[in-house]
Image 1 (tube, rainbow, N blue to C red):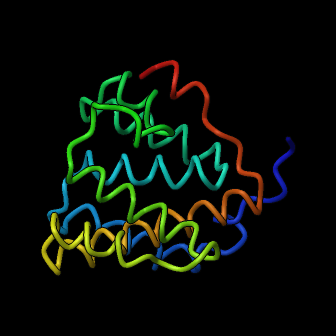
Image 2: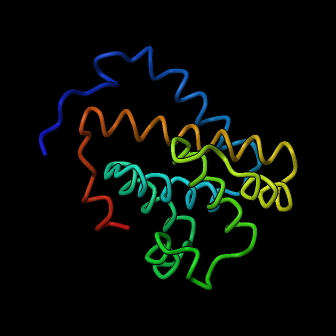
Length: 152
């Protein structure tokens, strides 16, 4: 698929708040590996090849296993995720697929069992951020950096 345009080059000022948002998320204290799982799962749902390539690579750099990454799309059936990770993934799916029935109380209740109020806000912001990045990259057909996957 041919890229449509380079959004960052076309409007660098639009990316400044997105980059600041990312900086906050890196420094907020929410586990980085968990954030990468969330980013990958949302990117799978949204079909964002650019973000999938980037975040699979980043997760591997943090020590995430191939088995857990390979099974992420079927996390409900895979026994390799903690209850906290499962709550985060259910929350991610509920927010990413919000048009399919809003965010169910069950997803919220489970997330609240595993995350403090601040952590849940930060987790929500991580989901919001990756969904925004997915939409930007899918809209403009940003190609994935495939050589980065091979090097990981």
